[in-house]
Image (cartoon, rainbow, N blue to C red; front, side):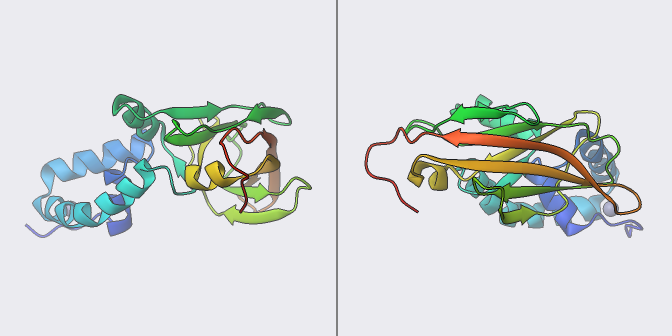
Length: 193
Ligand SMILES: [Zn+2]
């Protein structure tokens, strides 16, 4: 049987690393149950995606995580350090040698957004990096951002501002929230970039 609606390879990879929303995940699962062709292709991307998942599990990537990914990490026994500053607020944060993953839970009203970007800014609010079109679920009203723990462990005491920027149907910007992280270095040694 030839598959009429083959699942995109990128979606298969996201599915495997638990990077999809619950409803997307369910759709793919349903399709895979009835489609041998896509199941075979999933087996092919699994080998590749395992590498990505390993990196993500090591906490060294800056990426958006799904709740299921975080839960899976906890179940695996990884130490997850989480911060959840309110929109417009700030939080004191740090990272220790024992931590495996460092995540920020960014709460925002996402319901009106068609697309959401995450902007990573320095202490003066100057954008240093932007993650475009992050996966989000409007009903959850939160984006889970993983900071690279390798990077965080090397940081001196510093401040970082994260901003969620939404875009509506017409492409107009909707400021969703700004979150300030006041990082205190608690690792031994001098710290530097
Ligand atoms: Zn298929």
